[in-house]
View 1 (cartoon, chains in turn blue, purple):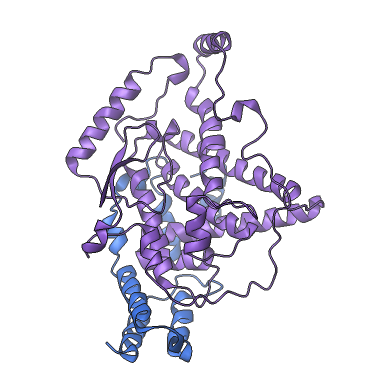
View 2 (view 1 turned 120 degrees about the vertical axis):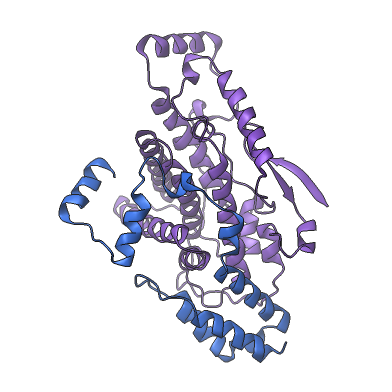
Length: 110
Length: 317
């Protein structure tokens, strides 16, 4: 596979990544699209470029999440079962903490 | 060759099969984080950090100078008997008491040593992975990011403990990390101004909150979200990052979480967890291995009858 072809595959994969749910100081998607669109890849060998693609593909395909499966013991922690669902609801904008729930969290820890 | 069965827990009961080179032959398998990262020969472009990191000029004690935190310290027979009697008479909550020595000392040491380095001293295997294999810059802030990542992994497990104990363990661990940073900034980095140290600590505290939030989001969503969080925090958002390195660190994190997931509250609460070295591969357990492991754990902890070994932490989950 030629380098240009691998680069196109990397860029195509990067473009499928979802937007960050909240704005961070840097976006992996945008920074890497810019990098692989530039002539910086001229310094990368074809083998290394392929490895970059393979790694990105494994990350997108959730290789490690599926290989090292976690169960509800960690994902719905018995010490604080609502912890992650509240966090994700907030991130997705499905529900917001109000002053009373925020106060409760600070006072009781959950 | 297969490097058969490595002990991951100091209890000598929790065992996972590990392999090194053989895994390369099977594409479906995962490799150890170190060997995966070493495959890439991408030219390293040093990131411009805009500041020259301050390096340690002295070396503080790893834990403390207190004899209680010395590696081979043992209470004398007389003190031990008095202690057991006091625990028995006053019905002391040993899970609460244990959180100090386990989370505030043992697990703190586990988090601290992973990325610890001193100029002109040989690196530990884990430090080699971070500074030589992943080519991260050697600085106090980088050590802090590595420590925060390990703190987060432990805090994920602590959340799954009964609430009052989990919260206690988390608090003891983070308090000790910040206490240690305060001391090291003064003793090792030579910062004499308390207000400067205070300012750095506030900044690091903000970073911990941000890291925990991002890693939690990654844990609940997918690999690429967790990898992006690792890239922003551990790799300092390096635009020229080797994605193979990000993948290897993600595999490292997921494998540690897997081991933590398989430990019972009792084992974890007694301080029987140690992070798996990055040059080893964690392989998922079969049902039979899991059953055998649970049986052995139960046998070990049910034989502990001293008042100081009392615990209400679960032996089943």
